[in-house]
Image (cartoon, rainbow, N blue to C red; front, side, top):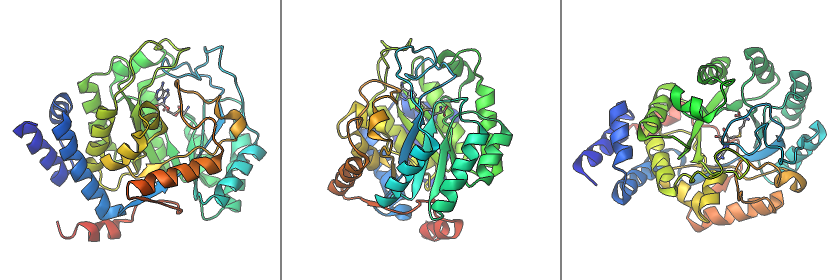
Length: 360
Ligand code: SAH
């Protein structure tokens, strides 16, 4: 690790911000020593706020129909081999019931952009979950919708929305998406979600095709400026039926390093150690937590559809039942000295944050 790297990690640790060129420098010079240094600081910062608690979100992948054609994604419209399914509102609701029984207090409803799920269909479902489980958070991850739709779903009781920005660089965005999708529109959606009052999550893939250090630096700078409540990152992993089938996957090392930097950028950030990370390495999710992540998102989808929500190849946990996923993750977290807590897992309020850092 060079002196410059050490200086930049220290600066990020104390000020929570860097310039674009400084992020780029850190990314270009990443090595084992700089990873260890960033991880040690990230873990210390997280410990101040969250101790050894790991939040858990129950992920319900309720439709793999998608009208979009993102070049990297296995459920893209032009993938004729994808076996399409959608859960009924009743099935989604029974996943929540099962999840509640298993201790989950956050449900994440994720899907492709499925035109079947109009507001007329989704709003009653969200309202039903909200009234049935008043102590739970409802997170939506349904892609780009109108402001009116985001507002209607928020009013129905959704608290959080995950919309990865995918890449903060417009030219890079254009290489990953068909012309019909616009970087600007995605960014506008994120601003709208935040202004409506959602706890908003952005995020990006690590090692996606054509990605440069400069692009990743822009992603970090975007997080620094946007100040999301959450940020989902994971390695890009190729899917055999996409145009990027032969591209290499993102690396464990770079993903872990970026998790640590994100923790230093925003100490209270909700930062998942993702399934994609667990897919590229058997202990990927544990490594993610040890790099500074504080959320895991086990799958709550019904066993019959799990092997159909395939965004990338070799996805883990497609054979298990929800209860098995919970037990497995509990054990994995315990083995590394952390514990899964059954709460909504909100970020601490401003007062509590202040007391954490009063000693600084
Ligand atoms: N349709 C929703 C949910 C997308 S799926 C939306 O538009 O937000 C959730 C995330 O999976 C995506 O945002 C993307 O970052 C990630 N993803 C898709 N394909 C992937 C791949 N091949 N490798 C790794 N991550 C992928």
